[in-house]
Length: 255
Image: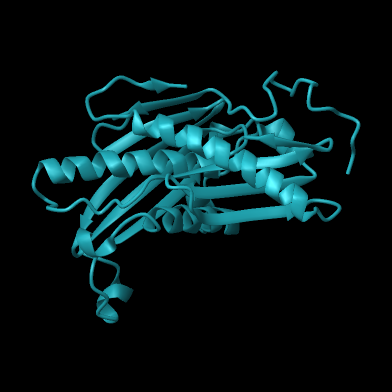
């Protein structure tokens, strides 16, 4: 891997290697939703909204699986990138990338939810990318948790739920290696140049939900993997702190 850059040299946006992009969480952005948040991480912006549906998927009914379900849908709006992207509904099929991200978001949220406590109900998390500058899937997971928590708080307040099904928080962040330097929270220009690219999903209590890591060129060492894990853990700890500040009636939260 290249070693022409040093840790002291500025990144493309001037951040230190271990710094998140500026984070903003604006709750109740979609007021018709049960819970919603507009999450901004740098120039990446994603609307995450939770909706409640009575009943569970057919496969759960067919297999007599007790409890509820939490699932997600993800989309990038046509104007979210410089070159207009075609709506997948127009193409008549969902891309493999979209399916992968939807499943990742769903798995991440189900990891911290007691599905039995939901009863025979489904909570949908819709994540729509308004503007993409790297890290859309990790921003979607981080924002979807807040939307879920706000929605559950309303269900508890209204007596729809009697027990809080949320057992922990969850957040996600990207890390990678660019010009030989391990970096936290890659923007698009860093992401496309990365020699190693990784997405990490962790709970607020510090447990891993998922790690997606790829060497784009040369394989990477266990030492570098531990360095990237450490960067990710620090970033997720900060995101967890920011998530916890969001309340139903409070102001938007800025990092």
